[in-house]
Amino acid sequence: DADVTQTPRNRITKTGKRIMLECSQTKGHDRMYWYRQDPGLGLQLIYYSFDVKDINKGEISDGYSVSRQAQAKFSLSLESAIPNQTALYFCATSDPGQGGETQYFGPGTRLLVL
Amino acid sequence: GNSVTQMEGPVTLSEEAFLTINCTYTATGYPSLFWYVQYPGEGLQLLLKATKADDKGSNKGFEATYRKETTSFHLEKGSVQVSDSAVYFCALDAGGTSYGKLTFGQGTILTVHP
Image (cartoon, rainbow over all chains, first blue to last red):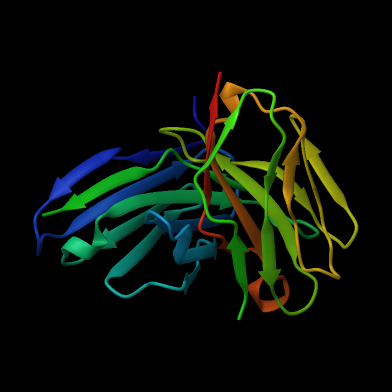
């Protein structure tokens, strides 16, 4: 079984709809992240959480919100989806270390906003 | 701010050819540097990393050396295989108040032909 899972894997929605992307992990990591990937732009950090009570904005948080329901679960919401939020979304986890900690990524959710 | 610049792709090679993907960075302090690989339809996974100057990361025949004097972390492989076809991302963790947050380059698509 995968250590980091994301649901749904694919989603088509309409402009103005609220949607939620979910991420679960079995790695026991405290740190979780949400990224979006656009062609030619690499990955951009949306939100991150270093523990259940800690939520922080990343580079591109406008139009998004998150919820850390438990150590293992971190959800991303688009309150009112717009077409330029069409992208591939990745969740990741990591464990704090001495530096150079590895992030572990889920398989991604492909979102299309019409 | 922190940034990572990768050579533009896509890169197309024949099997057994030599691979270099250039990566340069801008960061304050002493970042940790990473190469992540994304195979088709999958999330990113760590390929190799280096946490201090002159360190060499290596894995699966790939190598990269942390060069502080040239702020570079170029990825190399002596003989590529068809199975190496993927998207390669260079990334840094700047540490300090940015510790745990990755800054990614735009990604380089590699296609290897038999």
